[in-house]
Length: 271
Image (cartoon, rainbow, N blue to C red):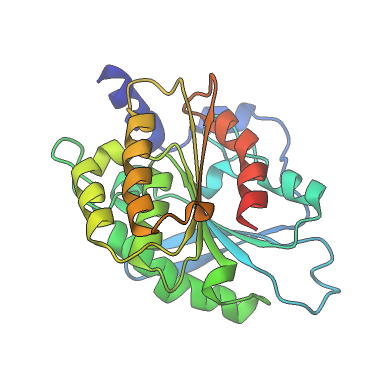
C-alpha cells in the first residue's frame, strides 16, 4: 500500500521546476507544435501538443490520429516529470504516417481527469468530462485544423497508468469514436469493481486493444487485473482474439522506460 500511495503522489504532483531547470536542452523535434484550447467540460484551459509526420506540409493526404494523455512526458525531457517517451524521435525513425495529439494533464487535477469513478480513499472520478472534452471539443478542432482521417478505425487513444485506465474506459464509453487503444500499465485497481462490471455490461467490444505491463510493477496487481479484463473481453469477442494483445515485459517496472520501450511495438501492432 505504501508503494501504491507513493506511486499516486508521483503521478499527481506537478512536474518539478528544479528538474526542468536541470534538464538537458529540449529534445522536442521540429515536427512538434503546441496550442492552448478552452476545455469548458473541465472549466479550464488545456495545452495541447501536436506531432505532425515528416513532409506533412508538402503532402496532401490525410492521416490517422492518436490521442495521448500526459503530454508533458511524451516529447521533451525539459517538460517531463522524470523521463520522456521520445514519441517524436521514435515516429520520425519509422517515417510514421500519423498525427499525435498530446493532452497535458491537469497537475493536481490529474487523478480527477483520468479516473472514471470515485475511489473511496483517493477521490477522482471526472473522466466522463475529460473524455467529453476530447470528443466534443478537441477532436472537432483537430479535424478542422489538420488533415485527419476522422473515422473510428483511424482514431486511437493511448495512455499509461491512470492514462491506461482512462484509455480503456474511452473505448467502452465511445466505441463510435475510438477504434484502437494502447493501454499501458493500467491502474485498474483504482476502479477495479466498476471497470469489471462495466466490461461485463457493455456490448461486444469492437476496439483493437494493446495491453502492456511489466512483471515488476510493485503491489498494484496489474497482471491479475489485466488477465481478468482479458477474460471478460474474450467472452464479448466470441473467440476473436486477434483484436487483443497482452505484452508482459520481464523485469518491467511502472515507469516511462517501460512505456517508451513498448510504444513502437504497440503502434505497429495497432496499425
